[in-house]
Image (cartoon, rainbow, N blue to C red; front, side):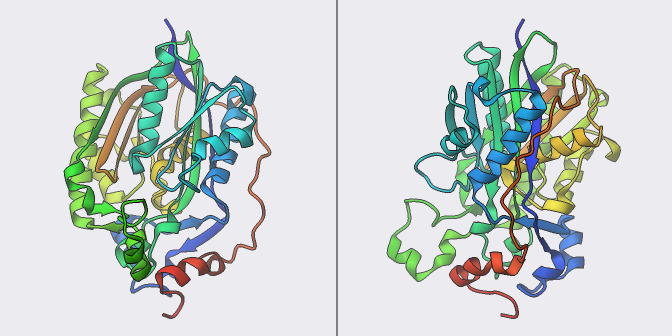
Length: 362
């Protein structure tokens, strides 16, 4: 029987850091306030586009799988911040990788996007449609952040993570999954001026229509419910007991949401992977970045039973019960790197301040 297994993994984090202390010069906040409410200490600001981040992460994942780009049948990029609407970010990544035999598609389920893409790619491999998929979550969310809005300015960052999904005879892979959405409340987390549905004259009057706007308390309540319920359902559907779960790798949006999901699964904190303090919320990129770092930290053992869970704009959610394969060490490493930058975080955000307003001392 053919199973789809994750055989490669990689991440790409821009080098420039925006700390909580940096934010104190931009908005009415402080390190104590941010840390207590979110668990975030810093986040990354990219000097390159979404496709560039995705390409480096993809190259590193392919190296870990020991695969040449020509072996990839599908490049799937989960993102809500593509460099452009036409063509897709995935098409740009496919070309940059030299994945000449691959189809390419973007998927936008916001913060749930990577799990949507992983579940769909796994189904295509399990069904014999393709043999190998490169699934990437890549975001440049800071492009859509109004740094005068304390409710969103402290939360988001940039980055990318990727996995290779391959057909194999080895046991494991996706054991159960759930995808969900509630579009009736889409307006509690959205960027209403970011697409073609906005009047251009209205956007010229108010650039903040293009920025992410969020009803934080309502999003928090719904995220806790959706991630907790969907996680327990996929564990049951997989035929596992809660105590069988070796690791929870949740979307890194807020440490309090993560804690609530872990309590729902009755998991010891040692079985929960958290890296939100270093990167903030990178939307579709959080889970593949976290998985890569969990593997690097040797917290994923051969045959590990992992629960992935995410929640995001849409309002979308997803969960998966996943049995990892026997190999948890990379077969190779890539020398792919982002182009250099001087690392001046305020310089990188200057265009943002000019567009949305704000800036140091404003």
